[in-house]
Length: 282
Image (cartoon, rainbow, N blue to C red):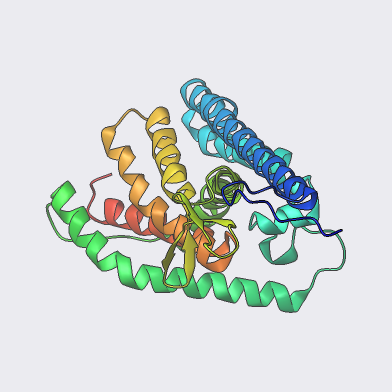
């Protein structure tokens, strides 16, 4: 005896395997949503309380000569606590391997030289593109009078460059671009979602720009970066660091590491200091 087909075409009964697959898909989606929520809570809590709060308090309480070092140690400590002490895969995905220097085992010199060369190359490219317009913008903002004159003491200049690179740029980039931007990328993987009509798979919408895949974490990180600078010195001009932060974040996405951002960040600070001292503005 052959069973007759269902005469009601509007009734569709999914086979058990499909129903089970749908349940698994829903569980996976719910788990992913919970993971993104936890990542967002952690990132905002760490940046607002542990780092910005401690940094603001330290800037207010410590002597000026100790502030930069103390702030750098806070950023590095937070990065170590949430990334560097973890497994190698987490360090790599956060762009914090630094050419393999911070990873256990024998150092791969080829990788280190390649990473350093790539970082320096991207930093120099960005400096070549941005420093000229920055100079004219700086002139309009500060209205310096007199000619540029700068007397450099080689050792002092070398010490200043080292400080900008190791005490300021490295800790800030390690925390903001290495930890925070990477963690926010987990919480905010894209500008909404795209659904594949054939498979039903959902993928985040991201912006492709010059070979980099950009997400909303770039904007959120830059906003937190700017607010952190404003919290330490209550000058609205400090909020302008939002814009170079976009460049630092782009370099993090494009190169998969923080090295280029560290180098370009230090170059920006040194260039700004040269203009301020050379025109005797600050």
